[in-house]
Image 1 (cartoon, one colour):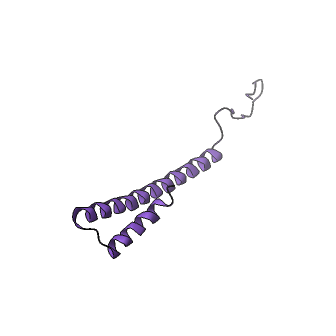
Image 2 (tube, one colour):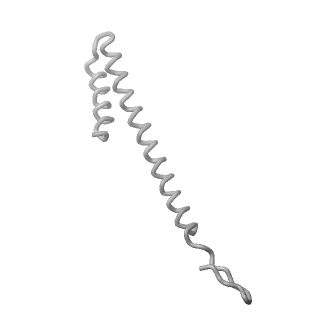
Image 3 (tube, helix red, strand yellow):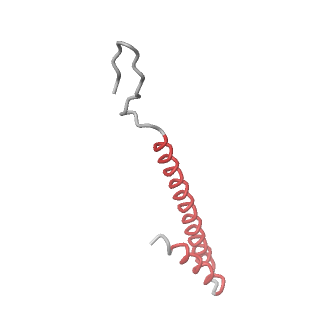
Length: 83
């Protein structure tokens, strides 16, 4: 549903330019169309930024060893080794 809202708003603005609505109705229809386009653009930008952040976090977690595994340390003489 969200993908066709900007298209419908652009179509509404084009129709408003071809067949102008009188007075306050024209202003209200135009403002609603512009708000729909700007709102959809903001949601698209937020979605892209959030996706980029999630991909970046996944890459950082893949590089870093998990805290559940302990480090393997060389055991000297008469010392036990952590596993």
